[in-house]
Amino acid sequence: MRYITYGLGDRIYASELLSVKEIVLREDLRSIPGAQPWLLGVMALRGQLLPVIDLGLRLQASPSKGDKILVLDSERPVGFLVDDVRNIEDVEELKSLPMELPEEVKRFLVGSFLHDDDDIVLVLDLKKVLTNEELSQVTAP
Image 1 (tube, rainbow, N blue to C red):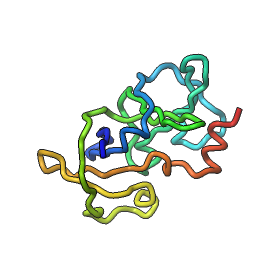
Image 2: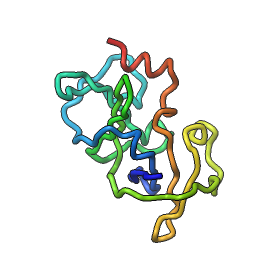
Image 3: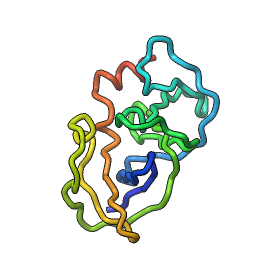
Image 4: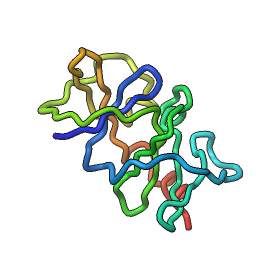
């Protein structure tokens, strides 16, 4: 399986490459009054409004400091702001999670693998980051 790796704070994460439609640079965001703190706002992407989620905040960590947005490949696209995009990795088998993590974060994770330099990479299922209700709220017309 192929994974795209990216940084958030001092951790490295990965997601299935096929779950990411594209990577775009952050542009001007329009805030949404009353939105969750992790919903940064919406930006125009080829004539469509793309909701942008701060993945760091959503994972109960520090806010993302980067300008790269991973656009989810789905019927209702959502963008996830990350600190940086690193590499594409081919991984044969995922390992169990090697550390204690908050339940709120663990529910998004599907496993881990070791990077070449022995860093632990946490594998995140981007499609689980938002519940169906949250997805409906952020992608409402």
